[in-house]
Amino acid sequence: MNVHRVLSKTNNTVRGNRLVTAAMQQQQSVFIGHEKFVQQPRVWNISALGSSNNAPFTWKAAISPFRSFSTDMAPLTISNTTAANAAVTVNNDAEIAKIIRNIKADLVEADINHDQKIDAEELKGILRKYPKIFTDQDIIEIGELFYTARGGESVSHERFMKAISNTVQGKDDIDEDGTQHRRKGSLSHPLGLGTCSTEYMYGKTRGLYSDEELQVKLTHVEPKTTSDKIAKAAVGVVRFLFDAVSMWNTGEITQAKVLRRVIFLETVAGIPGFVAAMNRHFRSLRTFTRDGGMLNMFLDEANNERMHLLSFVRMRDPGMFMRGVVLGSQAVVGTGFLVLYAINSDFCHRFVGYVEEEACHTYTVIINEIEAAPEARDISEWRTQLAPKIARGYWHLGDNGTVLDMMYAIRADEAEHRDVNHVVSGLGPDQPNPLYNPEEKFDQVLKKYVENMLKRGQE
Image (cartoon, rainbow, N blue to C red):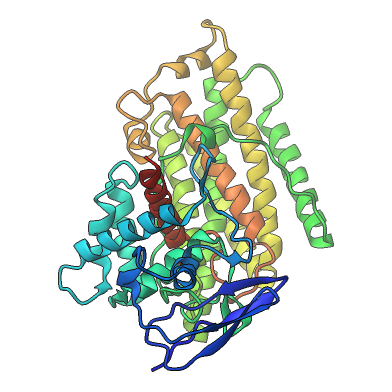
């Protein structure tokens, strides 16, 4: 079967969008810039990539998966997505040939059943060769993601190389038969991953925050629609009334004042995520459709807020009055939010987004008070006081994790909830989770893998 490499001419640039995987049975005319070349029949396969015996034009074809080439053959640049944000540039074909040979060598070495395909276990074997790049957790997660997304199937080495090509070029869409197609699951991603796994995989590991993530910025999303403005105004009213009732702005902030406030707020904060997940669960059941991975995300959000509460109640046991207030608030807020979510879910998510903006502000105030308080004030004790055991385990704070460390982690959680709810407000009912895309996650792994190869090739 002929598989032709489709070349499209745009602004004097030719982009190869299919690997040649079989012998070309006849001559075909190829336009590069304004010049016409006749490509003679030639048989080659991926194992020949990087061979020094290839003719010049065939060599361009061989490296085309790793670069878009035009008549001036600009150097390949790959942006590093790590913290250093460095860029790695390959300026000549020899370096690219070495990279291709290294990748091919990894594929051949991992191919334990010699079928010229790669499956989940073989992929994990490749990643284990680079422990400085991929952690054990990364390897397990990516292997599981590859297995579930492919339904247990393997892919050919050629398709794997095509996936690397697509990732390195940073393409958001894929050329197929000369046209542009936005990625929409297994029909367009080179590896055919799709988004099925989002229905039962979320992959969020709590507590592994970087120092940068813990330094939360107090952002604000300006309301645009009438619904947004109503949500913002409603949050402002609720904040004002609660501050007045709890006398938050009266006197200095103490441990007791903080714990009364956060314990009550966290009992309420755990409601919206669960209501959203329950609503989407019922919708999926009655319409026989997928949820797109949102359900798991909102369940995680609800449980995360519950873990905030369980950590705080280890520091202060609520009295009967507080328990009664919580019971009443659950009846009112839970029922009201359930009805409102069924009517206008976008409003609810925008409302929660603004609530989480206020939560980030509150925890920032608490953190600043802990860090700046003199030794005479009781809140200064939280700089050195051990966080509850449940908190140290949940957020991976270490055996010396303090209450202050816990507050930083909780604020990071609230910032995540803030951003999530603002993002999903306005999404259509059938849109997949924009914050957990298996295809993008796998592409990031491929990019890290190739960047590692580039660095090795330059050493």
